[in-house]
Image (cartoon, rainbow, N blue to C red):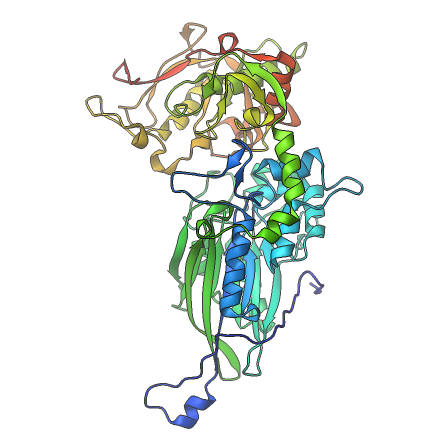
Length: 594
């Protein structure tokens, strides 16, 4: 495809530190003098998720966790400037591996409340911060598509760097809908520039998770397939170094089962199967991997992978050494490491740049929308039926029931699913603010209604119950080790509201659901129900059985988070006595665990 400003960026800068001239031990002095070497560093972030400041908008205070990590681009900026000062700015690049514009109330505010797409709308805070820091390229993440393509295109327009997605294709032409790559020149004192290509790859799961936004408009083939197409092209164009920025984890697993022929977490497979790649910046999985080496099957060479921790908690450094050989630069060594953002202060330049936007969002999330009769928390929600999760389910079921009233499916019972998205969410007794309600639902999911049978619901619950570690009846129960079996995240454990059941954790996964009933009677396998379900789950996210293929009888485009906020506003008072009940419990051989 023809190159343009966004698909071919060449960077030249004054030479800095990092050049070494040396020869092999025992080599003639003249040969050593002729040997040219150069070193440079590529810095990387991923899964920033709208974090500019070290601030938690849901708790209205500085971010903190058990490990005392810090978050945000303001901290990353300080680390980046230190690396540039050490290495020489012209000997560095800065890239990102996606999931940039969704995740905090700051990013939500400028997508929905004061949208960047409005006429004379604002510049997105993430674009402002990343432009100021000086990013060279960023891959698309799946959450870039959450707010729809118009918001993403506006964000793309506001960025001074390209958003890359070699496997984000126009559905009609099958040509890249975004720049596949960027090319950068690093000027060396040796008289020969190093040409560094950055290939961007995103996640095929977008076709499932954001089906409503991309269906018929874009398709997302596998990472290995597109890397195999583009890496040789980049080499033929003169790239001395090829780096992949991949919004895809390294585990080789998928959360969507067999719904797509492509692997969700394919970064290691790309390294193993596609020759010609020197390093991969990994994203999507929200894990920290300072350095991971994968041997390429064809070349026998190691490809270095690194994934910095999410939200700007870490900055990856790929340190390259190249040597001039046979008329070209050849990669001689690559190493990776991560820097921790909690070791530095926020860059005052970024704080000043976006201080007004931050204050607007703080004021927005602290608006009072109602009162609660008692305090509620998600602290024990992963293993107990807690009222705060019942609140989500009650609002969802009530919304779907009202939407179906008077129609063909009005007579079917309405059930609802919900997950514990955050173990720190809470509704305080007394005044309830937007941030309190929004904290229950940090994702931009929307609500759907699907028809399932009793038998299908049993399968659904059995699949969900794999979340618990099998624990014999006579063994002690440690809640710190009870959940997340097999790496199942909290958001892939569903409680279903409207049925009663027990989960026997002494039994193997697949045969744990006991005493499943509806309205006091054993659940009829043939009975039909409407399940209020979020669009992520309905589209196949988590690979839960039956729901993706079930008949859809209603859907809307309003975020569930906003539906909860509107419900609290309309009710005025949140009283668990009106909606909370113990519908499920953990047992062992019929004895409740708690």
